[in-house]
Amino acid sequence: MDLKVTGLVVEPEEAVLAAPRTAEPLTAEQVDRLCEDLASQGWTVVDARQALGDELLAALRDEALRLREADAMQRAGVGRGTELILDRGIRRDQIAWLEGNSATQVALFSWLEALRQSLNYHLYVGLRRFEAHYAVYEPGDFYRCHIDSFRGRASRVISVVIYLNPGWQQDQGGELVIYDRHQPEQALTCLSPTAGTMALFLSEEVPHEVLPASAVRLSIACWFRQDEVPLPL
Ligand code: OGA
Ligand code: MN
Image (cartoon, rainbow, N blue to C red; front, side, top):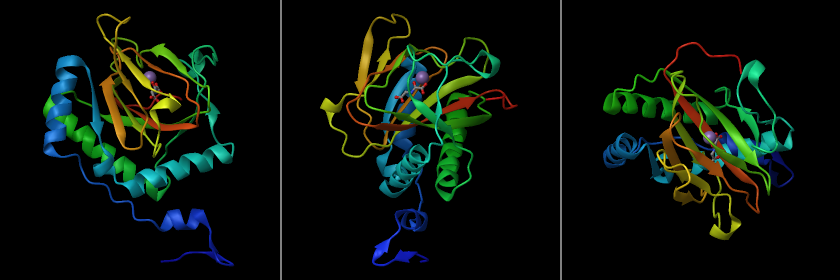
């Protein structure tokens, strides 16, 4: 192992880079249940901690925190390209797109790619690719109720959010609230953003919201898409 040692202190970046980042697929039971839930109700929650592993989750968290500290996050907007609106009344998080340019991201990408194939196999959804970004919500930040994709564009089809906050306490807030797709005023679940928890839902159909938290809240948002060509970000 090639750790850089300064005095007696191992520099955290090097220690993280040296950490193994193997992730296991979800179990067959987990895949069955998540596909059934997506097909019947349009959303599901999976405990992916075992599959992703604490080391990969910690490496992802460290990478997000490093980007935050390096001011490499950008204000998140609503819409895309020339239609992008930076509306702090709607969302306040900061994001950084993952580009697969670190061992940590490569490990996550291969795990997400396996998930893409398994969703296609079980649900015949024809997902062609995915995009993902880190999101940092500073204390008090929120994302008002929204859907992730406009109907009929076949762009974002399935949304996945993976949380990166070990030891998150319920009273710290920051829940993802999922609303009924047919009765958007009705909240169906309120999910604490604990490390390894993963939410999946139909991007065009399921209204959801991020409530403010009292601590920094880290996550990865990922969208599986049916279109081929990446659009300008
Ligand atoms: C999003 C989103 C949910 C979350 O980025 O579109 O809804 O819990 N994120 O972070
Ligand atoms: Mn969303």
